[in-house]
Image 1 (tube, helix red, strand yellow):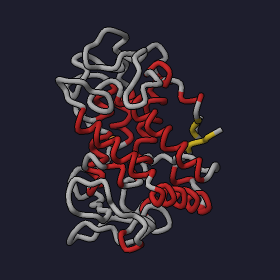
Image 2: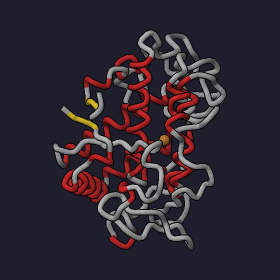
Image 3: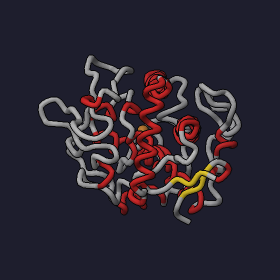
Image 4: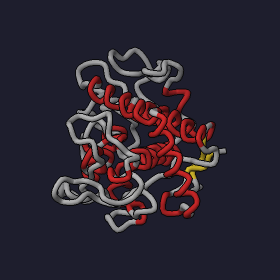
Amino acid sequence: MTVRKNQSALTAEEKRRFVAALLELKRSGRYDTFVTTHNAFILGDTDTGERVGHRSPSFLPWHRRFLLEFERALQSVDATVALPYWDWSVDRTPRAALWAPDFLGGTGRSVDGRVMDGAFAASTGNWPISVRVDTRTYLRRSLGGGGRPLPTPAEVDSVLAMATYDMPPWNSGSDGFRNHLEGWRGVNLHNRVHVWVGGQMATGVSPNDPVFWLHHAYIDKLWADWRRRHPGSGYLPVAGTRDVVDLDERMKPWNDSTPAELLDHTRHYTFDTA
Ligand SMILES: [Cu+2]
């Protein structure tokens, strides 16, 4: 059974194997197909039209399915690897071990944002940015450069306390748990973390930075935490909603699973916490 662990609890060997599996997916070309898929949905999801991956109720099940696909790809390289998660409300500075050279490497240099250490630095030759929105082919970051600090535990708690999963108009203007977690409204959790990391993470090609997976694994864990806290609250909307994925509708691009089928993560993995 796959156990997703807090990145701060990984052993040196677990970090080494995770990084090696990422590099192999990159080398084989499989990694970049995930970047392409994510960007296509970022570009296609709109508040007034069809929306599946973002700014809609299926933001959470879509990313759960996307991460499962990616985790299975990693496990096809090394069956011992699981996606770790980054609790950015605790490990909230660029000094966190997450950003050390033996794991994801640190922030970018000030002149051009280029990451200079770690396995994903351009100088290694192992991490070309091929699916991109501009001409720069090197991984960039500006940790904390966006101005706003990472969300606090109290801010996370204020969002977990929201009992309604999502509300009309089911987009970036909605009240409710999903949109506050996604960040278009209120304290802003998920979107703010993308901006805090900066570089490619602040764009539609955000999966170019491996921290994308650790960020979304934690967003996914917060959804699991929310479900346990509100056992009487379910995914919404249930049926008949134009342009939006209802509970029993299949999601693009896979067309093989519905939000209802993805509610219970324990069929696929568990977390290191109770
Ligand atoms: Cu995201």
